[in-house]
Image 1 (tube, one colour):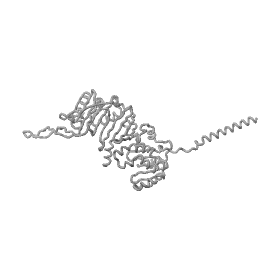
Image 2 (spheres, one colour; image 1 turned 90 degrees about the horizontal axis):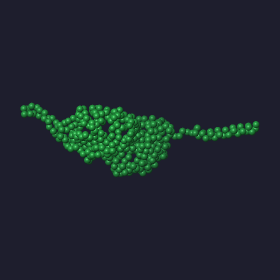
Image 3 (cartoon, rainbow, N blue to C red; image 1 turned 180 degrees about the vertical axis):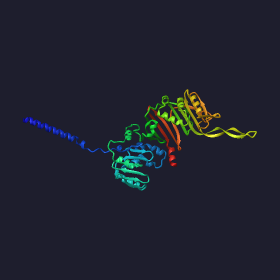
Length: 447
């Protein structure tokens, strides 16, 4: 009996020890505080979100700043920004995260290394801009009166904001919880595209939906001469449009004001009249009674358009005159009129002539003497061939050659902008917006 009682006591002691050990093991997990929220947990939902690698962006832009002789460029170098950031406790080697809603709201979050250094920074700013203290959620916030900017900072981050929803945005940042990342930011962070770029913008704006686009992204890059905005759009639908390796286009001499070169395979696209893009094209075309179905049936995917320079063309007009018997009569005369240089060409298949007939029937194409007009275009000559339709204001047909690049070139407020179609996949569109940096900086300087 004593041996049995001793065995029971040992078993009980062992069980209690095991229970105590288990309790001591899981106690930190039972009573542990929730981990503090990460910076990405504090970021709000917005129409546009993105990140900037400030230090790397400054290094990338260095050659452009110095070649274009940008004023105060020595204060924009990576080394200068790094030294100033260290002085004020700002970490410019961690990403700055920003967001925006339309034109009236934007904000940014940046990591701090030593928040105590920001107080002298505001004292210095106050010498040039009025800085006031205000309270939101019973927390002190700095306000830059002249700019309408609010700045809140704690030990680890600073929040810069301008807009009508300060209470909401700051409340979300202050009371954020670990792991509760906003939907838009969570999706943005999962996408690997443009991971190594210094400036990335992401949006899943509602305006994209009518074009069948799920979301879009843009990355900023530059060299010494150009600013390049690499863009990417992901479609909810199969695009059903492919790129051609090359296609017919006008040969360019000089620099036209406007140019369009497209080389596409639309074989599958023209069959799907329920495609979102097909519907959009049809809706716009319907406003001028343009025959979309006939156009897409006849078009073989190549389009070339040039506009620029001034050409003199003969334009016919009617003048009232008097005959030998002093009766009023209409007299047809011609005069030389300056018009913008204009050339347009599209590749066609066996339905090209049928499209031309439809344009005449709709009144979109009209004959004027020995020339023609497309709606409000200047008088043009037309050249109809089995594989091409072309129209031009010059006396002779512009030279046509094979072109491998698809792009749109135009001038915006004196700055040349070139949009290059880089790649089309089943549901993805890749392009680059190339902006002439010298022209852009001259325009900004004039303003």
